[in-house]
Image (cartoon, rainbow, N blue to C red; front, top):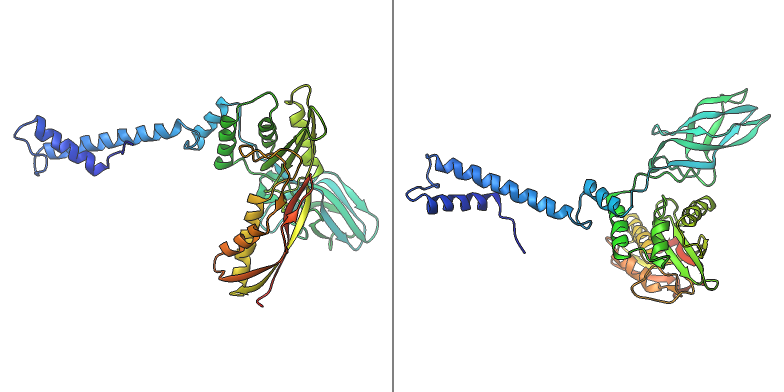
Length: 374
């Protein structure tokens, strides 16, 4: 493997070249004009090598930088998944002591300045609550909000109950906000496409098609799930939902996209996998501290995302890990994730007592985690 010389080595090479090709000169001795000339030439050579190294890296999607990664994707017909605004239907609940009217376009503001706009109006003639569908004023996942987040009513709400009205994020939260696809996620899609060329509706094709939809992070495919010509696709959206399970609107978006690219004879079903929450009980934890418990929760979340998969009836093929095949969730993975947590020195896994079985269409998700020091 060719190693690019350091700047110091380049200068030394130039000095040796002067001594070889200009007898009697010595570029190591100051002052003379050969001394700075060798440094200048060495610097130029080092810069050329550096640029050549940069160009070499841009040739491959594996090492290309952000700008050139876009060009690799463009060659394959792939583009970054765009940003999307967070939405809630309903997204906000307004508790009032008297009648109010909420106009379409009413503005609500979170404490950090993020604003939400009412998509439709609403009203109540007495004390109670009003549910309002909203969309974030700006794209990006920073506008996603959990249930109960308090909001300031900025404008668009009127009536005798408006002065003491209290607005909070409603059940279901405000979700779906997405940033533009990051480099490493886009790189993974490009590499998957290069390693799995289009093949007239192969299982890998469905992974590529579903992954092109904003929000999709993982895809599992079940071939021949209901006879010849049938395919079932399970998209997951780990960045949008805690358990990764997409909502009906998300499933509709993925289904609409695949319907436009699938082979004419294929009967495709896009479905959300059924979550099987796995409650975890940990005993004998040492040290029994909040920091260690939080570290364990972090490791468990990462492990479920990495190891949990949708079960199905497809054949197990080592080179096609995205197939929905018969599977269970291994208890050993839980042991390992807990042991990997920073600061943990000892523990016992009380629950689950064994591997978690899964039937076709199910996926294991992280359930409640209980800790005990004894």
